[in-house]
Image 1 (cartoon, helix red, strand yellow):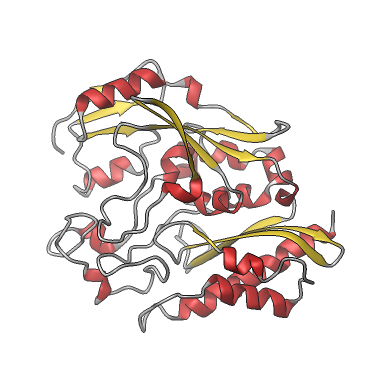
Image 2 (cartoon, rainbow, N blue to C red):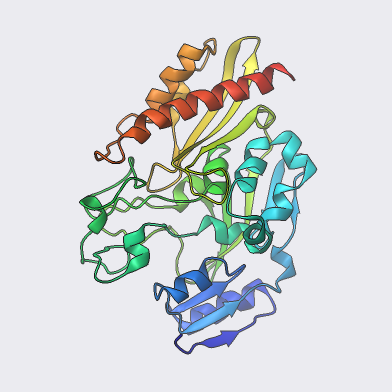
Amino acid sequence: MHPFTYIKPATAADAVRAIAAAGPGARFLAGGTALYDLMKLNVEKPASIIDINSLAELGGFDTSGPSELVFGALARMSDVAADGCLARDYPALSEALWMAASQQLRNMASLGGNLLQRTRCPYFRGGEPFACNKRKPGSGCAAREGINRGHALLGGSDTCIAVYPGDWAVALSAFDAKVDVLGPKGERTIALEDLHREPGATPHVETALEFNELILRIRVTVTPLGRASTYHKIRDRESFAFALVSAAVALQMDGGTVRDVRIAVGGVATRPWRARAAEQTLLGRPLTAQAARASGDAALQGAKGSDDSRFRIELGARTVADALMIAKQRALRQ
């Protein structure tokens, strides 16, 4: 472990001033479930740590408001997952949190930190002698010709095919969530869909955040789509495993016809992936098993895999189709 400066600010504004003064080598400490892990792997070597855990202004959440759901960046995953209003009115959001990590990690992990978790690619985490452009720009991508069963099928580039590992951001993207951040120039709002970047030629630049910006809260506009929603996650084992593929689906039905629909897929892309083309295949039409499968195929359109990962294209289409039928049953019970 290398030495670092420890700073504990009193307010969010103080935290932003502290990290701006410390420079790009500083990191915010929230739940610590990701930062400590990456420090042990020598992926992160912060010169300064800005501990924001005592900032009560970021710790609350409200799922009962008339116009928005509001989640403070420091709200803990387990607290939000267990919220009765969220489980009833937005089951996809609650399920995405319940299906992530272990109970011990959910008790510690913050919502804001969870959005920013980094890939689980073993070449990224392993370091040298493995080439990883995300860890060392310009070094190459060992995953492209290596063991890549769980790597990205969508959004990859010649420089990186590391998959985005999270669940919560995938579910949020289906609801057009927004992220409020604070930086030296004040507050700004980023659409969740724009928060994460595809690797392109710069895979080490993972989000639209500046190094000195702090996530304050996540907001979701109240919508009737929430009640008939689900987060469907397929993985190698039932718990404490990352998705081979996942689907967040929300529906609004008019009789047997789809009035509105949202679809996002996870575990298969370099960022949370909103499947808008798949949504368009269903609008104004009856939701049958055949229509659901066609929508699943559309959600994975353009997917590219290796011999080891290609099975997840079919698995992804089926997962979207199954999620749609689960959401349909919930819509019919309303």
